[in-house]
Length: 156
Image 1 (spheres, helix red, strand yellow):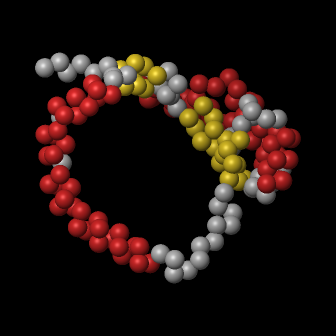
Image 2 (tube, rainbow, N blue to C red):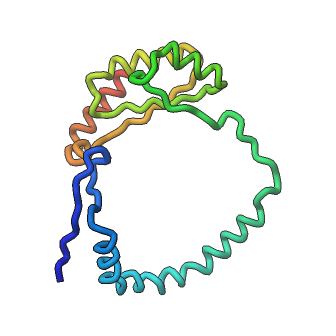
């Protein structure tokens, strides 16, 4: 039995993409039906407590109103809009919380991110930073560690 699976590397997602035909994927599922069915008994065993908890939580829903004030934020980037434009738009929308994503593969742009974040804070906006990693950072932990230390120094 041929167990080869057709994949093509997706550079945007940095992971494999299944390029097998629908028919081929269905054939593979049928070949593995025994493994799928083996999961049924343990899942059935756990389903009783899960269903009970679901109905317990469901019965508590809608007993009091939920306030959503101040929960929302917007992801912004210095690579998309200039700082002044961003601050103006956020203030018009009434948004105070922002998220700035800093990819590890854009290390050379760190000073640009640094001044952008400083400008957002000076405008009275809350800033949260998300550090993005790629496959190389996972494979080479020292590279990721260096990036984190650079960020820590740049964004006190």
